[in-house]
Image 1: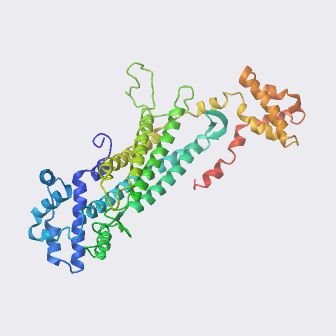
Image 2: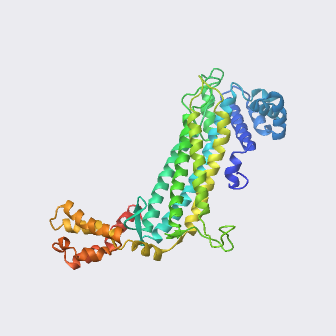
Length: 430
């Protein structure tokens, strides 16, 4: 998936090479913090900064013997540093380094996703303004309801993306943390000030309290946030899929010259990218469930969460990055058919104006229950017998007692339903 779909920046975050690079930076920063406090020589910290590195194949070779990735990593680093390597990892446990590095990696991935969402927001707002006054039918339960505009639909999505950005910003704050507090979080062999100094150097926040690990409710919040973002994208993509259906076809994914929709049927134009987004959102939601399961660990730590995180964190961040970029492109190039939208508004022969007609009758002093009954009986004739709704309304004796023909005509104007569109857009500064 990394090779085929994601941008190199996101994919690189989750490579083993980058993970060890991040852990190495944690180890070096911790040594420098110790030197600041006089716990190790300044010269040693400078030497470690200058010489510390690793060779991934060599780490893997050592791990075959140690069966422990962090020890293998530290052994290889020591081969480069020499005598001063005795100060590396002083007073730390593996999770101090690994969890702190993971916090940095999640922070970096969150920054990419936030940038993706901001670009999507920009495109949604631009196209919302473009179709601000483009009338279309609103649907509830999949059934024609009342007129709205296509721009309003896109504006609604942009508002949700705004919330998604806020969610990811908050989740980033929750996971951009570190800990250097030892085997069970008591700082038994390390000064708490080293944790503070190290985390500041690394641009993250030290947790107030940990066990051997940073608590996994943080990671679960990050993952459930990604699941919400993925679900937003699926919601938007599903609407495009529905609008592209042949019997609606009010909008559709861009279909490039030379593109093929089916190996069997040359006429096909399918919403394949939106369908892909819908499918991939299911993976992120499933991964979120796994993250929730990771919250529960035995006592002060076990490693049942570790193998899970090696899968769900890269997969979900790469997935959301990919899907957000893809949907941004879909909206940017979305083919929109205003004429089809107008035609679809007329498909039910004016039934979409039933509420306004009923309220116009009520305004004349008629009980709502009676007005509803008079309008509904004419509407049902349209549904069941195919009779013309407006014609029947214009000859309904009960209705004619209260409305003139001109007043009835006014009820069948879709512009009435759109009179507050500008006001809604103003709320978004548009």
